[in-house]
Image (cartoon, rainbow, N blue to C red; front, side, top):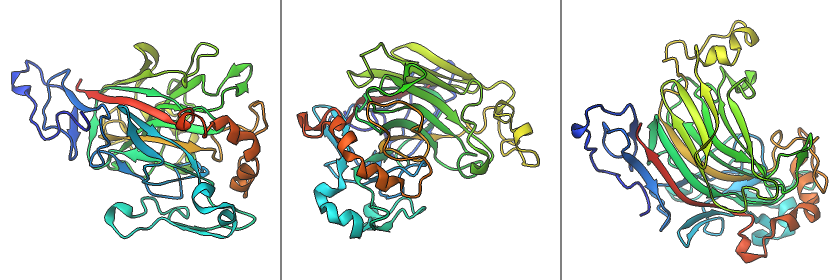
Amino acid sequence: MAGAVLGGKTSSSSKCQEKSLTTASGLKAPSGPFCPGDLIFEDTFDGFDLDTWQHENTLAGNTDSEFQWFTNNRTNSFVREGNLFIRPTLTVDEFGEPFLRSGVLNVHGGSPAEQCTKHSPDGCERTGSHGQVLNPVKSASIRTVDSFAFKYGKVEVSAKLPAGDWLWPAIWFLPKVNAYGRWPASGEIDLLESKGNRDLIKNGINVGIEQVTSTLKFGPNAAYGSGYGAPGTSFTRNSESGKGYHTGFNRYQMEWTPDHVTFSINDIETGTVKVGTGFWQKGNFNISTPGIDNPWRYGSIMAPFDQEFYFKISVAVGGSEYFSDDDINPTHKPWHNGAPNAMTEFWNGKNDWLPTWKLDDADSKDASMQVDYVRVWAL
């Protein structure tokens, strides 16, 4: 069944001895309160429910100045054989090589579903030049911002990650409303992020597609960072050597409660974020940001993770920070982080990275993120 299995229905919580702490809202959300263990959202991708999944439509990417643009196109996002596919393609395949250096990309359309979803920086229209090419890769990012958001619960996503140099798959959660202010003050939950490189090495460890990371991000404002790297808030997990997360489906799981968030893969815990005395103290912001007010001081101890969050699933490419300049790849990283023409450097290195995507093999399955199902249960 595509979409939320309980969308529009009322929970049977009157039969519960103790009601769940979980809440949910949106066009596909069931009416609460819920019983513990109620399945409150499910998509098994027997079809592509565009009422559930809204596409982002922007040239601005996610948060790291990546090199793709997100669009609503069945070349880049589609359902086949019961799986969701998010597949990167090349802009030149549609517009030709000269277009990258002289064309104009404008993502505004004539209908509400075609409006630009992220305006800054230069997210709705760009002009290519010889010094700065247009976004050379098309991809997709889908989200449940209008259809389903929830607070507290258990999540399981069965997914197979894409392989290919500098691909960046992610499944994450963002706040439905920014109750504590702009990112990262209202928080971000990364169920998983990974790097698509098959053989990316740091300190003797494969940090490419054999590693996934689960993280909570939070902070008073973007200038002071997102709490990334704060002790006990980010966890990595490596597969067996040669059996990366692109070789089969794995179950990525999260338990989100009023005092902790636990990440697991295939029922094996990756790590638990314990709230302790609160995320202001956990991020050490009382010392690192003197004179800045704690934005969560009037929230619960779990703030900012005490609000409803929605799903986001995306495949990005490159970026300004996520891929380190120092990690070792069989072919060199073609751009430098922070370079003003990083996107051009990336495109100029296509003879190295493009063959690793295997776009012409098996309908680009290797380079595609595949999702079998998404499920959420009440606590």
